[in-house]
Image 1 (cartoon, rainbow, N blue to C red):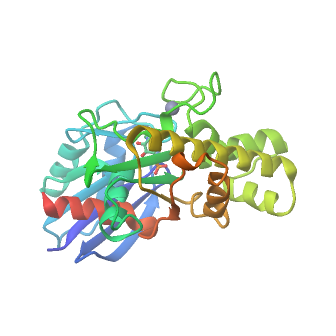
Image 2: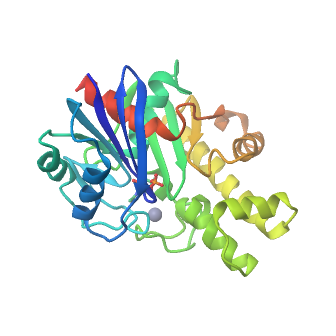
Length: 288
Ligand code: BMX
Ligand code: ZN
């Protein structure tokens, strides 16, 4: 049974048909960042095929509670609080969708058929516009009663640090997300740089760029250690546009070797790639 899978990120919307764990007819468009959920649904409807599927699965950035979407960090995706995404998509397509947080969906795909296969306690981190995380504890995907489970991007890395869109200060996301790297890089380098440009500058020997990236690596590795101390994670997989940038995983692994051994766990690259959210959401919709 083909599932129409939709991934709503802070930067782009991706859509594909998934059947038998395979992705077909993938297409994508920029995410309308208007602050209106209805504009998201209109962009999805425009991008999607008109039929040929029997179920719909949506992975989205933000907190998903009973099919409603709220941005924890409105800078990652501006939207009305509690926007009824499931019912709006249900109305647009005539099929009630399954809606799940993007990192939670990707964690499930990695756990079932990617880097997390064979582990019982597993964490997937996406380092992209924001920092998302999905947790598998004792073989089960944790979403939490309010959908907040796994939002490790909003655990504190720098006490008293930069104000995060979520309302706290010094969240991991304010130091290590693609958005944060671009912001910090632009301030320190005195010109507008994107995250990839910051990596390029560091590669060319720019010390300030390298320092910003090292601070991000350090914050991520320490948040892995914090999670390990909380729920004894067996393995961490890292994905996302920034996470999969050349040298990033290697830098995490190297920094992790400085941790006291009890906190140290394997850190590996995500395997389901940029489509893990699509796959995971489709798998969750099928098992429902
Ligand atoms: C943010 C948060 C998470 C999300 C993560 C990665 C919002 C809108 N999103 O921490 O729910 O999983 O970003 O999202 O509050 P992405 O858009 O970078 O993939
Ligand atoms: Zn935050």
